[in-house]
Each structure stands twice: as C-alpha cells, then as structure tokens.
Amino acid sequence: MTYCPAAHPEDPDPCEGPVAVTILDASNAGVLGCEHHGARLLASLDGGRVYPLPDAPSGAAIRVYRAADGIRPFPWNTTAPRVRADQLSRAEVRAARSM
Image (cartoon, rainbow, N blue to C red; front, side, top):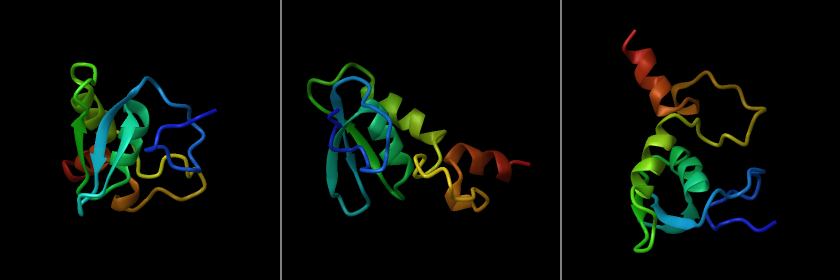
C-alpha cells in the first residue's frame, strides 16, 4: 500500500482521497497530503497551516483544518497517556478551559 507524503511512517491508516493539500510547519517546511493524513499531521504540529493545492476539491483546506481541531496529536500512538494539554486535541483543550 502506498501512502501520501504527509502520512507518518507509524500511522497505519490508509489515505483517503487524492493528495489535495500542503501542510506547512512553523518554519515553513511543507509536505503534500491527502485530507485524512493532512489533518492528522496538522493536529500534531504547533503553528501548522494548511493550503489547498490548485486542483484540490473545493473546501479541502477548511475540511482539513476543522478535522485537525478534533484530532489528538500523533493519533497513531495509542500507548501514550493523554492527560496534558499538549496531548489533547485543540477542541478538548478549549472545552476544558471553558469549564
């Protein structure tokens, strides 16, 4: 099975759809990815950004951005405890702060 460039080597999930977005980290290093792996990568970055490729399906970047909000960093790592704020999804952190 082949994976898009945004897929982490330890991530067992297959790609979903074509390569549609570019994910940039805080230092502007970028990688292309499908929406699924783009969201998982974006969720794992501090200061990451997402941009659609010119031929991407309409709304691809916003779908990736919204999906990443609810994904915990490094979701393929199921053995790590998830108790600190940096181990939770951005949505979980916001919810905890509003309580």
